[in-house]
Length: 296
Figure (cartoon, rainbow, N blue to C red):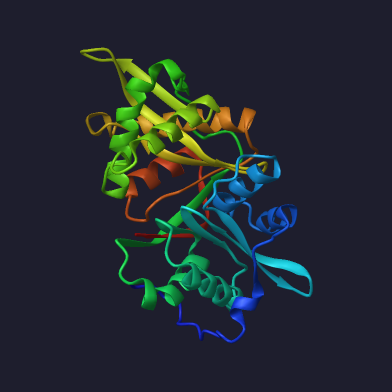
């Protein structure tokens, strides 16, 4: 692991006592509001619970309190998502202690790079070598009309085209993560894609192909709060890349999202994906921070 963050001294004494699990969800949402873009992955799940959404049995919200006030939170589910103010080493100590006591149940640690890399420094000696560390993922936002013309053919996906959309989603996932999402529990991934379509958070453009409609651009709003909608799963098939489909497709997603979903559109991308970064900047996205992801 290579990054410029100095090794923090881990104050383990009493750390476990600082973590609470009976977190007031409204208070947790207010903690996330301090950095709505950096915390959106945790905030989306917390807001869903506040609004009465179904709680998955293996997920919880950890909190660190000081003087009766919630100062930091960590979403603990399929992913660990720490929401910690920069410099709050004590909160990272506490969340690391809780994670070590529970054992690794997550497939990734993701969020603001400072918090993610700091948490990983504390967990690595016990959790071992991860599959991949993505330490530099620019976090981008756009809160105004896109700088390029939206693709008029990009629209919200329909349930009756899931058989066309699913292969594109799977191929995007394999390219991004390195293995098929259908491995082990295919029903879960299919349900996720269906849920995004049903919620109006899946966007697609299809063109006529040799055997029927083919996806030439797709994207999803993978995490949505009242303040931010984070775009995930952006994909153009390899044979159609370099023709502006990504930029104009993203412009369409941004325009429709700003009009109907949230006042800010965000995304994060690996720093080495220069083609994607160039397309997003062409649309008008600007960097406001850095994410990091630890993949297991």
